[in-house]
Every structure is written in structure tokens, then in C-alpha cells.
Amino acid sequence: MEVKNVKGTRDIFGKDSTSFQYVESVMKAVAELYGFDEMRPPVLEHSEVFVRGVGEGSDVVRKEMYTFLDKGGRSLTLRPEFTAGIIRTIVQNKLYATADLPIKQYYSGPVFRYERPQLGRYRQFNQFGVELVGANNPTLDVEVIVLGYTILATLGFTDVTLKINTLGDDKSREDYKAALKDFFSQHIENMCPDCKSRYELNPLRILDCKVKEDQEIVRHAPKINEYLSEEAQERFEKVCRSLELLEIPFEVDDTLVRGLDYYSETVFEFHYTSKKGQNYGAIGAGGHYDKLVSEFGGPDMHGVGFSFGIERVVNVMSDDEILPDNPNPLINYLIPLTEDENDAALMIATALRVAGYRTEICLDGTKLGTMIKKAVKKNAKFAIIIGESELEQNSVLVKNLSTSEQELVGAGDLIEYIDSILESEKHECECCGDDCDCDCDGDHEHCCCGHHHKKED
Image (cartoon, rainbow, N blue to C red; front, side):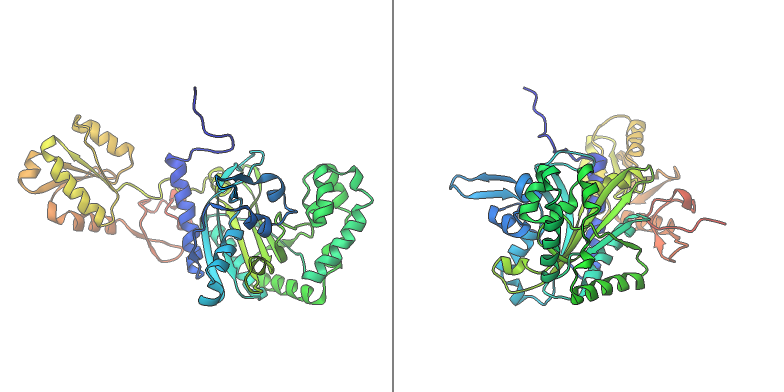
């Protein structure tokens, strides 16, 4: 029997794993700059968490959840999204009473949805996102949107299309839903089965239909801005004004409703088409919500958040060739020439690792030239050779693989020596004045250090 991975899942290893680590590390770092801390809810929740939180009218609950009975007969679900679990955690642990408000959390990890695998989308995929809970201010909606936009800009994305809309307050949505039901009542018999179900559960969902014939009907449906209360209209105008003030380009999409039922007021999506012309649709999305905390038994509290699909972000970056070639480079490759030098190599490698330098030991025992070639293939910065004579002198031979220069260095001076070499190879970044660690030697066109250098005139 041939054992394969489950359909809709993928193995992530090698360069792909490195890319995931890089993207997630950037996202976490930017979120922390905005004052967010990490939360890690469990992968497994009682099914009620998602039925209550995500909404029975959503496609996620109706068709996509991995739900099963455990040995005690309890209905459990692999999380299809994070927000409901984050809110459950906040309420269960009474963070709304013990933490300073607003509560600002980020998360990262796998989610599970039983849907047709497609471009950049899998049945197990990874999300990064944030939730800001415990304050109701349109400026906070903007702050979260800007956080998402900043993450994409930091990763190297340009020309991101930010689409925004408002679903209004309770009265606005109820009036709008009534208008939609009245409009779609004339067409629903000829629409897809999903739309017929959405018509009964939540007619707002019909606006998100992907069937071409139904989209033509949706195009003529009433628009939310015709039913907004004065307060909801003022709130949305404030969001738009703030985005304009921050010079973040956006477009208002009055068909944007998002796929989960808990949203209210501001909703948004980050769209991107790669330079190769591949349209990935929404690579990140989110919005405001006002009932989730109370739905889980907590007080009336508002929140706002977003999530990114890590797979889609990595795929687009790969398409546009903006992933760094080697974000976590190997610095040292230790080569003991015989078994007699293995213990010394182990001690030196441990010291280098404690000092923060990524280091490997080659124990192949082959010819020196072969091991040097292996160091080059691994893109190591230094090959550190330990032979009988070096062991007798308590020293190592350090070969700089970028320049082919080599020097005998005392074992006790090795870390200081490597520090000095790497420091001397830094150059001043022309765009920001910072020192950066790349070794492009001024060839900024091919630099991949993460800085956006100005090109020479």
C-alpha cells in the first residue's frame, strides 16, 4: 500500500518551510510593533463554538467544517478559523475583566476547511491574524486595517488593492436584509442551491455568490448605502477619511460582505494580482464585529480583526520573486579532518551557536575539497577547518567562502574574529541610513537583504 498525504493537504519542507518561517516572522514582528501579543487557542473546540461564533448561515458552518463525535459522544470540530476560538478564550478566562482594554492579540497556525482544493488554498492551511477586542472606535478599525497593509508593504508587496465596505449597524442591516429578500424573491427560483439556502438563513450571503449567472442578478440588487443609518454612515465616512489622511489607497466595494456572519460595520479585503498576471483574489480580509463577545456569555464588547492565508501570501511572493533567497543563512560550516578533531569541533560549534551564529558540523570524513564544496553548496559564509596541527595549536583555519581568503585564528578568538569580519562587510543602506548585513557590495539591483535601496543614477 502506497501511503500518501490526505487530499487537500501538503507537506511543507526545505525552501518552502523557510519561506513560511520568514513570512510568519515578519507578520509577528509588525503586529508586535502595534502592541499585539500572541495567543494560542487549541486546534480542537466544541462544535458549538463555531456554530455560535461563525454563524449557521455561513458556508463554513454549513458545508466546510471537520466535525466528529469523540468517544464520549461530544461534537468536536477542527477549527475552520481563529476568531471564535480567540473570543471563547477571552470570555472563558475573563480577560475582559482582568486585562487592560482593548485586548490586542495575534495568532498563527493551521485551520481546516472541507472545500475544493484550488490555487493557493488547501483543506489544511495556515492563517495569521489579529483581534482587537473591547473598544468601539472607528479609528481602531483603521489602525487594524493599516496594520494589515503595513505587513504586506514590509513583505515587499506593491499596488495592493484594499477593498472596503460597511454592513452598517443593527438597524441598517435589518432594513437592508428586508430589501434584499424583497428583491431576490423575484429571482431566487432560478438561482443556485446555495443562494436558495442563503435566502432563508442570511440574504447578505447571496452577495458573495461566485456563480456567474447569479452575479449578474446581484449586480442589480439594492446597495447597502441606501439603508445606512445616520450613525453608520458617519462611522464609515470617518474610516474613509482616516485612510485618505494616511494615504492608503482603497476602493469602496458595495458588494463586499465577507463570508462569516459575525461581521458588522467596517469590512475589508486585501486583493493582489501577481506581476505574472495571476489573480489570487483576497489574500487577507477582516472586519468589525459587535456581538461575538456577548454570544459567548461575556459583556457587550466590540472588536475588529483580520487574517491572512499564509499559503497565498507565500505563493504570490514566489510568483513576484520577492521572497528572500536565504533569510536565515548558514554562517559557519565546521570541518574536522579526522575523528580526533570531532570533540573540538563540537565544543567550538556549541560556542558559536550560543553566540547566535547558525553553525553545522561536517562529519563525512571525506576529502577536504569535497567538504569545502559541500560548504559552498550550503551557502555557508565560513568554512572552519580543524586538523591535527590546528588542534595542537588550539586554533582553527577560517576560510571566507565569499573571498576565498583564509586565516589561522585562535579558538578563543574565533567569535570575535567572525564578529569583526561580518561587521566590516556591512555597508550603509542608501535609502534609510541603517547598516544592513547583506554582502551585495553595493550591487543594490540584486540585493536581497530586505532594504529597498535606491538605484544608482
